[in-house]
Image (tube, rainbow, N blue to C red; front, side, top):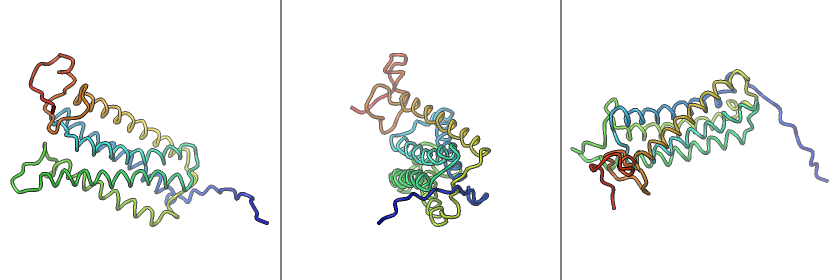
Length: 217
């Protein structure tokens, strides 16, 4: 006769080493949110209009951050199960692989000698090249996390850790909303962004500005 008695899950904090995955999820939230925020700074302060591939990369950055949000949000309840870590990191690694491909694609479009690239650069590299580097690094980091997952995945999260996690989630949410508004300003009442945006189309659609902004037919 099969014993169907369920085995209770024991909470294990594992000390600081046990909370490494929780803190890494926190870093994913803050880190990717900061990268998106940096792109927004280039957009609004340097008047660098992001192209469709740029926005696609931001979307995958958002998904990678949301993978961290999933883990941290579960930790705010006090207990994180192993499957919660897997779901969160699964979202992050899919986002990092797909985002890395989008960044690689944009890099290859400007790889020929003499090509000035799209928009400005930061510390000698264009933003999409930085994006490719960061997405690739994220895949490597998640792989390392999986390798040591047994000793770094605590089930019990101290209450003091949950407060900073909540702040990170709110920060991420705010940047996501700002990015959505930025997309709407660029795209206006159209189905897609132009390959090389030249203005905030919404102001032309509303008749506030006249001329100087062409969208593909």
